[in-house]
Image (cartoon, rainbow, N blue to C red):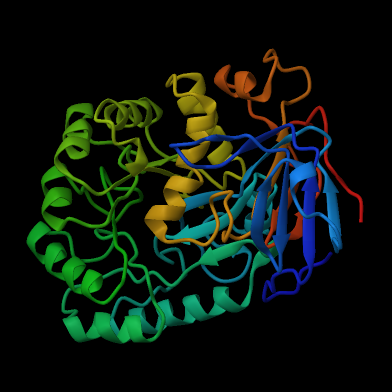
Length: 397
């Protein structure tokens, strides 16, 4: 079941049976009435009760042993460089560690930690195209890394964004990390990017490291980027009132991150919930960063928003899966036919006070992961990073 570096999806039929609880990732229907699913060539084809599905002729069978199955988690905000190494913390295999935290897809907010990162227009475009190509061809541990997110600089014109798009670049790095910091100038470049199919994210809050700067609510509103990046700060947040104003006045995605202000994370989630716009909320880690690498960062955000924020655990899962999948136009992130078979098998941690996995998360505990599947292939067994799960699935064949 090993994966080659290019991440070729499974060929054949995968059957998952004996699921105790299936979480869809969809806010409108977070819990599915199902105990089995079928995937063919890495794509989900059927979900339901095992006795109602065509499970014959399976190439691989996973006995879930009664654990919970949910979509692979998506980290909406990472800063990769090249390969599975980060110079920010001189750490190897950090992406593989995120796999053991249930993350199956990562989205770059800019390859800003590259030593000597080029800031001239030719160089920044070359870096973005190279990063996009490199991670498209190499998937550490099987994790899908959507990279190649240029940090925009003064002097860029529309043809630069057109050239990037034609080369396959689909993301902008955090607006504000480069020399473009004024709202009017950022808005012009964001509009060019959007015109050519490139999705944008804007830095929100105080400077993240020496040399970066404040991006306040007025700049965020004027720039009108597609994603309000780390609305709870990375790390330093805007005042709570300004964050709530952004939730109210903007229609863009609200990104909450692990490496931010936890109090404001809860306030932003509650503001979106009160506005009946929870579908706009997505989760990220904003790592690697000065505070390190957080392999369990997305799980910790789910537990934070459920355990302290009061959001039902099955809905908190949606923020890290289906919400991000829809906003980011991903093939995974939801358990439904036609989606990539990116799956996480988890159970309540041993000795948690919670009687069920959802109750344990709502008490603030992190669940234990027993298996991770990407594109229909088992990429990891029992997690080396989470607390041990009470029950773990078994790859039968």
